[in-house]
Structures are given as C-alpha cells and as structure tokens.
Image (tube, rainbow, N blue to C red; front, top):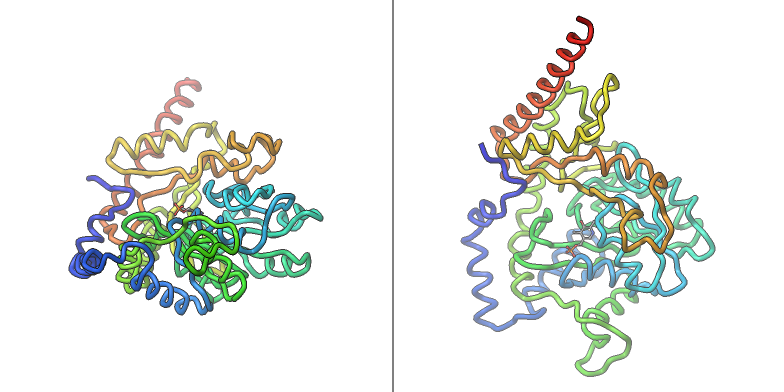
Length: 391
Ligand SMILES: *Cc1c(COP(=O)(O)O)cnc(C)c1O
C-alpha cells in the first residue's frame, strides 16, 4: 500500500467543479493582482476570526515580515521566538533588522514555554511571536499576561493552525497581530503562494496595507518604505472557494488523529501528540516522538523507523530536524547545542506521519501496523541477542 504524506490532487478533484470556474473568472476579468476575489476573501477571513482587518499577502513569510514591520519593530529590538518552528517565523524579526531571541518549547504542547519566554526578556525586547505549531494553539493566556506586564507586542504565527481554537476562540485573533500562510500544503492552502495578516488595530492595518503595495495607498504616492507583498487574484479566488470547506477538512483531520491515537495506543516506545486542555488542535501535522525504551540505546531509532516506513510505501517528514538556534545562518547569535534541550530532543525523535483530510482508515491502520512491526522486529533481535549472551 502507498500512503503519501499529503494528497492535494484528491482534494482538488472534490472541488474542481467550483475551483475551475473561479479561476476562469479571474482570467476572463484579468484581475490578476489583488482585485475583487482577494478583497472578498479578506472580508470573510477577517469575519471568521472576529477581527477588523485582514490584509492578504503573497506568502506566510511576507505575513511574518509585515506583522512586525507594520508594528514598528526595527533595528536594536529583540523579538522572542520559539526555537522549535519553521525558519520563516524568524525571518519576520531578522528582515526588520531586529534580533531573534530563541526560547525552548514545552514538553507536551511543543509550543513556546511562557515561563522561559519571560526569562528571555531584556530592556530591548519588543515582541513575542507565539507559533501554533503543528496545529496546536500556544498557551496564549500566560503569554498575554507576560506581554502586558512588560509592555510587549504579542504576535501569532498561525501558519499551521487555521481555525484551531484556544479556550473556544480561534487563533489568529488572540494577539495584536497575526500571520497566516496559504502555502498549498497548509490546512487552508492556495494553488500557489499566499498568506495574510490579521489585526483589529486600524493603525497597524493601514501600515500593513501600505507596506504590501510599495508603501502607498494611492498609486505613486509612497508615504513609507514598502515591498511588493500583494496577493494574486487567482489565489484569492481559490481561497474563497476553499474557505467554505475548512471546517469539514478540520473535522476530518481530527478524526484521523483520533484513529491514529487509537491504533497507535499501547506502543511503549513512542509518544503520541497531546491535545492540551485549552486547545482545539487542527493537526496540520501528526507528530510522534520515538523515545524507545530504557533497556537499550535509542540513538538513531527515529531514523531507522523512518527508513522502515519509507520502504513500506509510507511518506514521513521531520518537523524540524534542526532547531533554529543551531541553524548556520544564526551562528552570529552564539547559541550552542544543549541550549534548548526539548527542541533538540524533538529534532532527533520527532516523526510526522501522513496527515490530510482525505486519508483513509485503511491507510492509518497500515501505518500503525508497520510501526508495530518495526518495534516487534527490534525487540526480537534484542531479546535473541540477550539470549545468546546468556547462553
Ligand atoms: C509555512 C510556515 C510559514 C511560512 O509560510 P510560507 O507561506 O511558506 O512563506 C511561516 N511560519 C510557519 C510556522 C510555517 O509553518
């Protein structure tokens, strides 16, 4: 059996009858950049999050950058960021000329540890970026308290957590400003690059809109520095169609996670993802940790399991194999191995199993069977080794 990591084609087939005319309409009207489809999507996306403004941009990375830029983060400032995230979270700070300050993640949620974030605050700290990693909301209330106490901006990187909820409220509307990615593989994905910024601040929204379009609100009247971060019309049209299905797809992801949890229960060598009590997890990724057991060395066990799964026709991923503080591009910050043990452990033991709404129960059962088989074979080899040693 083949189990892909994700399957965008099957999803496209299910909505082709709506997508094709929506794209055709953009072609007929030549509304290639921004335009009505994009503005409609902005309105609906803002409304769904109960925030005043949505600014559609051309990637999640652009969203990360604009969020901090529009909020006035610049050189000399420090921005607190989890070490366990995708690199684009850090580009927001670095592209503004600010210094990223990394913080370890919690052992169960895998998100930024609020206590550690507070310890990292200096007089130069201006913002905390919380990432809702893998689809699980970060623990926003303690973060908000810390941000308020130290007068910091609280930013959400919601790239992996469309329509996830923290204490019943959708992420993306919890901090002052948030960014989303609509990269095709994300829970809500365009058919190309895409992203958005959400905020209820009129001032930040106005600046973000200007930055998106060369620092201008009126053509050729450049009030501030800017960039070209405009969303394409075709992506707005695709997202407008797909937005109607996000709840249905989220339900399917959650159902798949439940099935994984059931079929993978009772395997002592792995740790399953935890849904925190405050969270509605949307399972952008289903990440298990391969911890092995205490009786023998577990080094490389994750890689061996991954190899076994790939050989069995199952695609897997590592998210992320190198934590941000150990990336070469951040050598200048002076971090070293051992600084953030939980992020480093996850980099060595985490494995993302196939996860997408259209995944079937048969496929999930097969993945679970292969994982069990791998450990059974391991144990057999191990006990025959012990047996031989005793004889
Ligand atoms: C995908 C992602 C981004 C960047 O999004 P792009 O649209 O690919 O630029 C930013 N942050 C996180 C956490 C992501 O997963």
